[in-house]
Amino acid sequence: MRRTKLVRPLAAVAALAMLAACSTDPSLDDPETSSAEAAGGGEDDAGDTGEAGEEGGGEDEGSTEEWFDQAVYDTQYEQRSATFEGDPEQPFLQYIDGPMTDTSEFASDGAKKVCFANASISNPWRQTGWITMNEQLKALQEAGVISEMETRDAQDDDNTQIADIDYFISEGDCDAFVISPNSTAAMTPAVERACETGKPVVVFDRGVETDCATTFIHPIGGFAWGIDTAEFLVDNLSEGDKVVALRILPGVDVLEHRWAAAEKIFGESGIEAVDYFTGADPTEIKKIISDELARGDVQGVWMDAGDGAVAAIEAFEDAGADYPVMTGEDEMSFLRKWEDTGLTGLAPVYSNFQWRTPLLAVEKIFAGEEVPTEWVLPQTPITEDERADYLAANDGMPDGHYAKFGGEDLPGYPQVWQERTIP
Image (tube, rainbow, N blue to C red; front, side, top):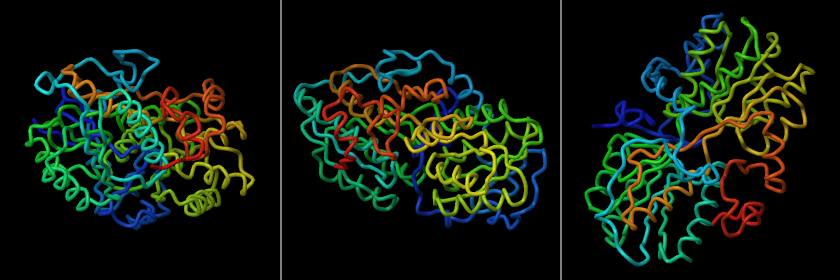
């Protein structure tokens, strides 16, 4: 059975998961080009049909319809309210009940070497996760589970990561492979070659088009993000209100899934939505919002990742306009600005604590314990009622930190995260 797009549950045909909140694909067109500009339409009004996708993406990235999958949408809609197995105090070990992988063949004593092929640490979300992963590594090294983790950083390049994986395979001394793919299709053959070694393979964050991995770890997915955020905006806006959607990059499946779900809900609810690609550039974000405000009122802002959320809010302040209803992310800069302004907001998450789970999965695998074949982690937005608690719990953390990083019980807390010590 082959996986299609990222995060399609195994029961439906398997999966994929993304970059998380924001990662890059070097094969993509210029991310600073808005989707309206890419289609050559720019100022055309999408009306109340929700067809902002007509302005979005351009032919190279494909239409929203290409990314929308009703079966996956329905599954992730239900998973948002699923019961997760495991201790809620350890969300990085929770999972939705489903098929399990028998790992008894890998059971053995002694510390093991892990080889990690990482897509990149090129944005704050990935940097936060990388810090957490290394603190988890220290704990497992002290426990005698892992001897070392040799890591190669592909710096957002497919060819580099393929070479990294092949290097690990040829090196021959990896006891387990951990892979966070840079992109989906391009990385599939290399992941399959890792599987052919007979060693356990753990894929996390984004997926690939094969189910050969011992476990595939990811939060619920992009459609869930899009549903949570769009429903929040619809509940707090009126039919005919305008939403500006700020998107990081085209062609990245979980990001595309976020927008595909949101666009569907906006269209069904009579919300006028226009979308732009920003490359997370604060200057570009301010320009987009300023231009839209010059054309008329903007009641809502939707984002497929929180980078640049503060810039969007500042554009309203600069224009002397009322604050919008807005969705950002659990990045500290947004949470703080949200609190300071009192705007109506929601912080969706692409659970950053998932960076702990691959190494904890390796621990289980070498203990011969079953692991979920598709390890679906919780993905719960931060609401206004919870915001103060997360701000207090992350007091002293830098703006680029993510509130749901899940590393409070690890060595180095809180100093390593406060100092933003990148290994």
